[in-house]
Length: 624
Ligand SMILES: *[C@@H]1O[C@H](CO)[C@@H](O)[C@H](O)[C@H]1NC(C)=O
Ligand SMILES: *[C@@H]1O[C@H](CO)[C@@H](O)[C@H](O)[C@H]1NC(C)=O
Ligand SMILES: *[C@@H]1O[C@H](CO)[C@@H](O)[C@H](O)[C@H]1NC(C)=O
Ligand SMILES: *[C@@H]1O[C@H](CO)[C@@H](O)[C@H](O)[C@H]1NC(C)=O
Ligand SMILES: [Zn+2]
View 1: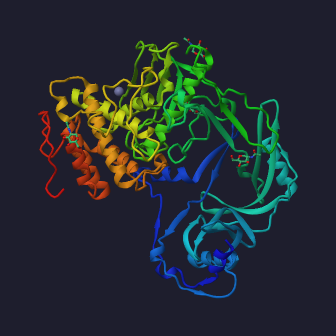
View 2: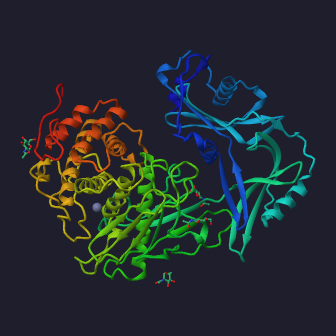
View 3: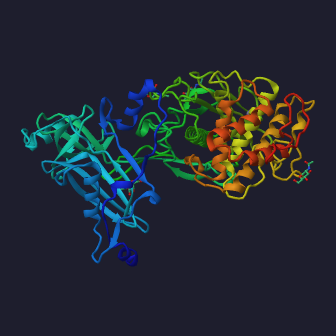
């Protein structure tokens, strides 16, 4: 470490000249929705207590990543210590063309591989609260720069006209809490209208045993008018679920306590509607209830206990599944609702990352002004008896109408087993929602013919397998082993790269109208496509959050989901294959074309395979 620092004793001269930057996270926005969707990453509403909401504003930020290869290294080794603070401030000064007196160093540190400097904007010696910047360095060159510095159109005088005690009383009165004695300071607050207000920063604690309201806030009180403009909530509320973690299959693999699994990129408001004790298995993406009764939701297992002021609060859905007792005991119903809620939200989030968004007709109550129809979160009914036993269903209506996921009890084992505790069954059902919505543009009318419905079953098994392949080695995959109480699962063969283990070919569609058999041909073909891509490009264990990865499992899901939007209404298997080849051309420039053709051809879906003529063709295009 010391050695590393000594090597870095260099001066960086003129960095700006040849740096090539690109901005990350450019969102696909509907031009008509620009205002709302931009608001979505600059604004949030914080409820302090019922009826008291604050709109909190963060100025838009930029994030630039500098490509090391194109970064000019005008560095000369010199014999004095490179100074993170000076270098960071001087970089920001030149990069944003601001004066030295407009930048203050906040903090910085060195990790094993990089150094990080954090600065804030200053006016008249007073720091901004929400206009900040950060610089990351590697080998004395800047590798990234994030900034929310502002150029206010109007800036309040830097001498307060309101005294601090009046400001404290205002904050106590509005929040109905107590000033905690921490010395107030002055700051500038960038406002959504482009102005900057001078504020007192005043800490307030709320310990209200009547309403059970608790909190610790840093309030920003206008130092000229006394208005409480905004606040910071110091208390993080973690939500903990006792579930079968996403990469595992069923209760025998073990439950775990999972904390805050929500992906805020995909679910910006979190998974739940409400906070604290109002948090139930209900939110913007999913509501999970028992046997068709929409009000029978799970509530937290432990009441939210009044906290000592500085501790975090936790909401727990910690119900211990009792395998030897029947499904109808309340803790087992809760275990099913909580696991179903967790899996259905996790599926929402990773589908979202891979393109099943509001504009692509996904399932959400609130679409945050980003397009598509809202009002259609998934309704997940655990232990659903409306269709008997030993099954599971997903009913997809058009965009704007809720999807229903019905999980039956299975009675092959004693006591019966709840399908909402088997992750592959849940993922299979939820994938029906994806395919029914994405093929045909949100109408839910385009997987109706026998072959198309068979493809739907195939995609559902293939996505379940994708989600549960948790290691770089591609393993055979078997559906439904736990609910069926049989290691052979509910399909005819395991999905496998061995044609001894799974001999299915395109020609197996000849003479069958069994959509599950058709589905197995397609799912096994896709299992082989998955294996080819993973063998060529490796495996990323974080693929669910990283659709931009280069690994084979990432590419597989990208192409699967991209292909859905391309194919015709009521596709055939040959057309579904063609859509994969086209999806690869669109997304990856066709570099995987031969790999895909070879794999499809190995299952009889070669170039001369013909739709509605179920004869195998093993040919690949010329040049492959
Ligand atoms: C969530 O809460 C908001 C505000 O209380 C309400 O308008 C909305 O309908 C709720 N959504 C669900 C799914 O309960
Ligand atoms: C639905 O569930 C709620 C909450 O558990 C319960 O109070 C109500 O009686 C149930 N309704 C029916 C029809 O069972
Ligand atoms: C609050 O939560 C954060 C993030 O989970 C954690 O780092 C911190 O230690 C917690 N603080 C307390 C007092 O428990
Ligand atoms: C099984 O795979 C092997 C090797 O990939 C191949 O030679 C053979 O023809 C295949 N058999 C069938 C029935 O597809
Ligand atoms: Zn199905």
